[in-house]
Image (cartoon, rainbow over all chains, first blue to last red; front, side, top):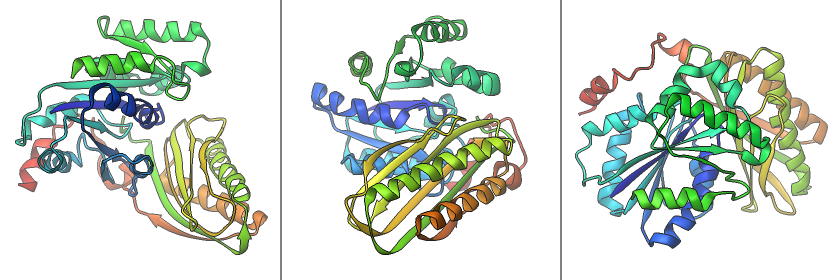
Amino acid sequence: MDLIVIAGFLGSGKTTMILSTISRIIERTGKKIVIIVNDFGKIGIDGKIMQKYGLQVQELASGCICCTLGPDFISTLKTVALEFSPDIVMVEPTGIADPQAILNSLEFYNGPSINRRIIAVIVDAVRFSAIVRALERPLKAQVKAAGLVIINKIDEVPDGTVKEIEAKIREIRGSVPVIPASAIEGTNLDKVVDFLVSAC
Amino acid sequence: MLTPDFSAYAAKVQITSDRLRAGSEMQRMIENLMSRSVIECVRAGASLIGHAKCIAESDSGHYLTCSVTDNDGKARCKGDLGTSFSRIELVINILLYGLKRTQVEEIFNRVLQEEAKSQGFSVSVEDMEVHDHEEDHEHHEHEHEDLEDNHADSH
């Protein structure tokens, strides 16, 4: 099975991106997808939303799967793999997670084999500069771990802002693929799906 | 992005009315509740709003989700609560930087009571305990060196 991590800061649009792309991925590939959602709050909201859309979801709440819930994540991943035999497991960590730490935790995974591992990091075009000012180091860590960066909410900012954000991302990691998109408007989601599907 | 000034507040709220109410009335209240809570958190010193989000489910099976990510408090909502109901369950998470969880709790509860009173609803709040990073354990660089220990402990 393949593992896709959809990471990104709080409120960057991870859940919306998953909801907007998953049906296209299924339609394109016919693959079976299970989602593991990690919400920092004691009651997961994102998982509830996804279940309302009819998706197969396993929730991990009350912490972060990159540290305190790490063993729970590994255990859940193994259970999902054995119980559902998915072709793809899509993971939405909490927005404060370090995605590289999630991949590193797979060292302790001993379930059915994982073929490909992709980290897609969503950056919020509207709040990018504020997040860089407040949390530059962890934001850089997210981008450095990414196999794909999606600049989301481009419908809410001028084109010039998107270009500035892309330039900043290139300073951090020059070679990473970058797709400007809008999960709400559907802009460039086919490109996002193309990337995720071709990588799996 | 877990820093000493990060805090997470979660609550489950039961909202009831002694008469059937239109879904649009409740949606307005929820939008005001989310928006005002964020604005007042910013006024109280929150340096960065992570995400304030909620899901409201009516006893008629309808649901509404709302999200605030900006300091201006603009609430974006999807769904609807149906045409009439007498009870709503609302789950809310507020994740931000620059205020303690207890401050967020105080602000949210005050705004909730004000909005409920002005709209004629009754509310009861169940505070879902979420660990406050600052209060529950020492700050560390969140470099995840503890994961191996956690894994060993659980197996």
